Structure formats: C-alpha cells, structure tokens
View 1 (cartoon, rainbow, N blue to C red):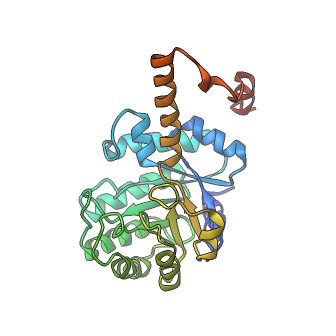
View 2: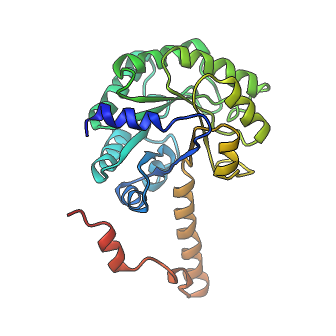
Length: 270
C-alpha cells in the first residue's frame, strides 16, 4: 500500500464521534504487541520513548527521536502516526525539515505542538506559521497533520476559549485534526467538539477523571490516544516488581504473564 493511500485510510478514521482508539508505542516491541492485539494504526509517544531511554520527556533531540520513530515504523505493517513534539526547530523552516524527514521515514501523520517551552504557549501567529510550514511539505491527503494545542496543559485562565481560537487558526493553516491534551471535563469536551471545525483528538489517562471510550464518542471525540500512559503503566510494573524483589524476595509479578513461547510466536515475522 502506498503512503498516500495509507494516509487517506488513516484520515478516514477521523470522524466526529468515531472515537477510534490510537494506542501509543514507545519502541519496536511495544509496537509489535499492539499490532498483534489488532489495532489497524498506532502512534508513537515522545514521553514514552524518552522514558524508555532513561531521560525525561523533552530530553531528546529531533535526530534521536526520528531514529526511534523509524525503528517503530520498520517493526510493523500497520499505519504509524508520529509524535513530533513542537517540531524540533526554532523556526518554521526547521519544523518543515522535521516533517519532511518524518514523511521520508514512512509515517502517515504526526502531532505538532504549540508549546515549545514547557508551560508556555507559542504566540498563535508563530504557531500557525509552523502548521503552515508543516502542511507545505506534507500535502493534504498524504499526511494527517494533528495540530496539538495546550491551553489546558498550561492552565490558561480561559482554556476553552483559547483552545477554540487556536484551533480555528490551525485548521485554516491546514491541520486535519486538533489535539487537545489535558481536558477531562465532559462538558468542556462536548463543547470543544461542537465548536472546533475539525476532528478532535483527546488523550486518555493523562489527567483524571479518565473517561471511557463510549463516553468520549458520545461527546463527539473523533480520535482517542493514550500518550505516554501505556509506557508509564509498563514502567510502573517494573517499579513495583523491583520493590517486591528487593523488599520481600518474592516474584508475584511473574504470575499470569504471557509465556516466553507466546512472545516468540507473537514477535516472529515470517
């Protein structure tokens, strides 16, 4: 299947109220396991990739991140959307270079954030310029551009209005989908999906309460991702298992696991 065809099919999943679940992988193994479960598409997680490499979220440069994304794309046959953070560049032209490199890797889409410095939103004009630059090197129909806007993450005093204002700008600039992390209030989510003139992506597991997929679909959400939540779940298991071994000398964490043989079978590519 060509990249353009794959991107078109991926974009077709983004319908108001479809609420398709897009799980986030952090390495080739997690990607293969999610594909084996049956997901038709998956995304990467910049936080999860960073955590798995022993650094905090935001602690990797663009070259390192693209190398990790490439390993995930190579490991699976399903469509992959990339978490490209704020584009790994100070200027719109540098962001365009990052998007072009991601397209070359073979991803069908990617996230682009409007918060380059933690806790601080880019001016909307600059953020729009970056979306336009991304769109210029990844034409409509060939790459699903998911513009992330962070008013809820930075606790903007009027997060709803600021999210809608920014979303309008990014859609006009060519974004296919608007990603709003940090929102968990059902009323706000329903209002956002009604006001924003594009499919809306929310992330489950980042903040509480964690709404289920059925509820999010009823609220009009098109796409549900989980960000670094799966990675945190896996690494939390390691933390608990390590404490169990060190403090109690027991191995209860080993009960009920997928067997070695099953892993061999699942990860075999014939």
